[in-house]
Every structure is written in structure tokens, then in C-alpha cells.
Image 1 (cartoon, rainbow, N blue to C red):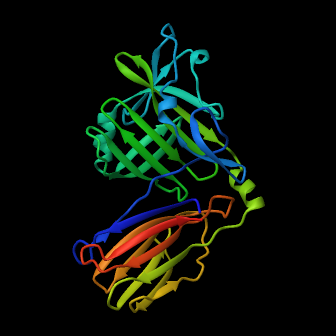
Image 2 (image 1 turned 90 degrees about the horizontal axis):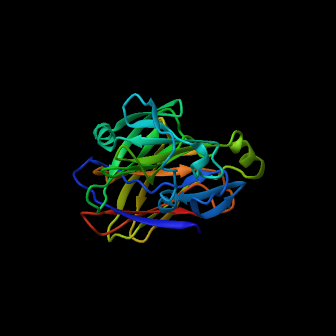
Image 3 (image 1 turned 180 degrees about the horizontal axis):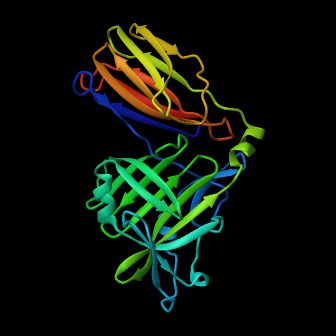
Length: 312
């Protein structure tokens, strides 16, 4: 089993929708000195970015520095540097050096939408702020409009932006990380791209799609009615089931066959409380696959349902 995460979700008011999101995994083609804990996944490597290592990127102080292109929202400004003096991830196919505008990013992200130009490609990001316990740090996660296999994660400080942007699970992703270099008093950032054309086709040769499954357990002292519906990235209903559970009941769902991408469970308890849980579908490849959702009804009026998400 690769990982289990437990979420206890409060009910709030009747018919309120409560969303819960999980951390993102950056999937890339090859390992590099900027990544840690790589896992072979059907020809790909799964890893999380080691931001501290990326920040060690060095640039010659005598490099010829000139501002170049600016994205439409003035969040990134490219700086032309002597590329021979830059240490970039070995497996990326392209990189740029930029300075960033965290205040502008925060302003746009507060409305839930940020438009970015990344190396000539325009993307509309839908973001949701996540709770974080550090002062002057904002954390956001979300997806790219029109890209059902996308995921994005940003950490924004007063003078820096670090990010992982998956355009799709298998072919293209971007990374953004701050360095120790300064330009005009601002931190220089490295923006790089991984591109692996035909990555999903290579996965298909060796692995099949992993269907969704969920379990439902009633750990409460009374019976409950529960409605479980699964929606795809475009909010189309994929499957729905109604259950009546007695104390101690445990129910196993049928397999739900879907294409790779992000999906959303909508769970209604006793026609009063509504919860949501996001899950990812993928190929059953070595230590990767679709998420299995475990739903547990508990004796807690404030938090009547617990979710456990598992990739096995």
C-alpha cells in the first residue's frame, strides 16, 4: 500500500457542501538532482520537488541580465541570463529564469482564477486556498480549465512563488522554484518544463486502467441512509448508489470503470448533510493506481463521516 490519508469532515449546516483536497504528486519523466524519493511507475518517475535543493541553483553575478517577456497578468517577468552558468533540472526540455509578483498572484487567486502564460502556453487555473499554519505564507491547489488530467499546487510567500503544475498526468508539467540569486532586489526564480510526448501511450502498453472502488462502514449506533454519486471533471454523473446501513454494516462497491483524471464523490447522509471528496483515476502501474475511498459513518453529530483515501 502506497499511502493512506484520513480526513474527518464536519457537517456544518444542513445541505452545505464541504470539500476536502489532498496533496499533489508531481509526475515526471526522469529523475534529476532536484527531486527526492523517486518511484519507478511504468517508465515514469513519481517524485516531490525538493525546493531546498532547487534554491541552491546558482547564477554568475556577472551575467548579462535583461528583462524580456512579461505574462499578461504581470506575475512572471523573464530575465535573460547566461545559460551556461545556470543549473537546471537535468531531465527538463526547456527552462527560463524569471522574477515574480507574489502580491499580484494573491490578488487574482483570491477570486479563484489565475491566468498564466507559461513559455508561450496560456492556461486558466482554478484555485482554492488551503489552510497553512505559517505566517505570510499562502498555499493553493486546483486544476487547469479544460484539462481533466491536470493539477496545480502553489506556495506563495512575500517574495517568492514555488509551484508544481501538471498539465496532464503523463506528458507535460512545469515547475517553479526560487533561487538564491537576486535581480534588482528581487529573487530570481527558475521556471522549467518537462515534456514527454506519448507518455500515456507507453503506460497503456504495460498497464490497464484501474477502476474506482469504495467501501462504506456504519460505525454509528443507529441506522443511516446514504446516497453516493460520482462526477467526472466536467460535472457529469458517472455512477450513483443508495444504501441503507445498520450499525456494524460494511458495504463494498462494484468496480467503477473510468478514464484517467480527477473525479468528485458527492455523499449525502440522511438527506441532511452533504459532503464532497476528490479522487484521482489512473493506471494500475506498479506502485500507482486509482484512489480507493473508504467512508465511515461515526457517532459524532459535528463530524458524522470520516474519509480514508488509499492508493494500493
